Length: 196
Picture 1 (tube, helix red, strand yellow):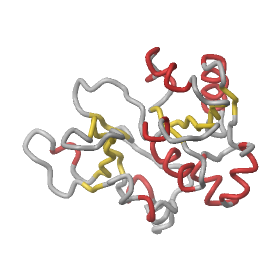
Picture 2 (cartoon, rainbow, N blue to C red):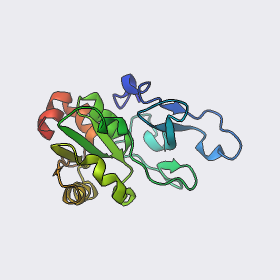
Picture 3 (cartoon, one colour):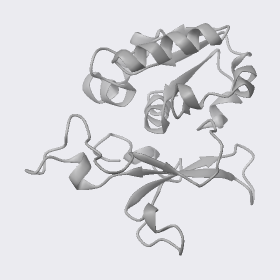
Picture 4 (cartoon, rainbow, N blue to C red):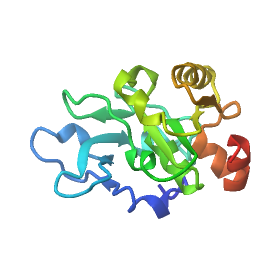
């Protein structure tokens, strides 16, 4: 998280690490635990968890340098709980007063956008979108669809912008996602790029 510039928001989003899993959940051992928090909090404040691979073999080169593009061979980058439906990450962004909200491809980009002062919700890919998510974005002047800087990201930005009445495609430059853009160019450049 420090490498990605997200150390200061790790506690805000209640991120964890699975050092030792309970029986039946061994496959999550060694992964980053990302809770999907409900804004109301309370005893049912976590709607679900997703688990992200952070293994050095996947994230770093053999010489210890961080990989530009992670390599996950024989396993997925993310795992969810069995039978859990797709959900939106960081739904608190949908109830905070703002004329705009971002929609990212994933949790880390939503956290990065939040850190840069642009409220954002994450969806784990366009295929995870459900029709009942759409009304949650209706009250904003604009929904900034923050796609990655690749063909899939531009398709995500275009498809979601067409689906959302207030959608505005804001794909990142080639090879960058929201987190990498902010790490490389800073928060002011990010806010300028997305027009806020």
